[in-house]
Length: 455
View 1 (tube, one colour):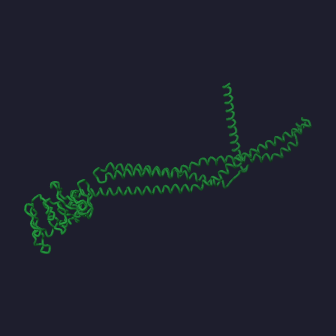
View 2 (spheres, one colour):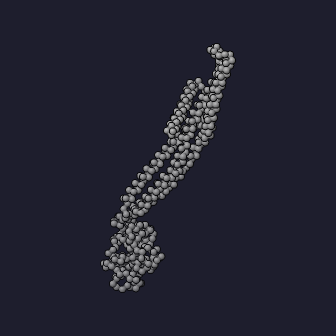
């Protein structure tokens, strides 16, 4: 029984599928026949100029949207490619950058920030442009299918309309044929049966005409429903393209502007680091060959070239003119009035003492005032300070034992704890600002002498 029921159901399914296939084939044949008749001019075609214009705008809008979608995706691909190229370039710089060069950490940080900025830029472009455009383009296939269906239903409507018209035209001919029965029927049928035969023929004709009218009504209803919906949607869709273009390109412009602004800051930071690295290279070069330094013209006017740092025993010398006699460390210091030169007398009459060949000088409490260039403010120097100098140029410290200076800063020069540690052309000092704030000389550092001038 079960197998029999399954067989029956299977047979019904096959019959239903075959029936639908036959109906679809009949519709296709009818539509093809109707289109041929319309093209040959033997059947009129229903036309809607406003709707056809809407369909033309729809097709144009769909093509433009597809092109914009394609070009925008190509732009995003280019952004991603540029990101990868930028990342490789930054990685190359980070690998080549020596650890002891100035700004190593800054270079690594700039590379990381640049990579994150590219990632954020790409993602914001996707969120603000691609997603909206994809949603916009997703509605076109469904509307396109409905337009095609509406065109098919219009052909069905025209075919049903023509069929009804042909039946109405043939009504009179049928009535004439029914009024004059066939001779065979007249001869074979009795007189009372001829009326029944005529009535049957009229009924068959009326049934065929009624069916055609019902089919026309159904075709017209389906067509008008689709036609009304599309007539409302197509103009709305056509106008929506302006809003999409405005939103898409405004978002892209804003994201791009912010990206380039942030990228400009990172580029400026990298440029500053490279500039300081170049300064560091020049400073090291100048420290090795001070005689070739460009800062020689701004140094102490006592020499035309950058002087080398003198031995420690020669550092506590007096002002250039007049140069007072320098007491020997082994004898007592004379009274202050004997060491003060006559500034209003003949400077040429003051003898210039020969520097002592003694390599070291033990600095005692009164010695700072005796080695301070003979300036009028020598009494203001802290104990243990030889003299003070003024920075002519900025100096960026490159090692931990160096003193970083800004142009115009005043530095107290102090003696080295071990004279052998002093390099030629370098001094040891403490910033005047540190002494005024802390009243100690602990924050010491070495600096190139040719960057300063005695004050």
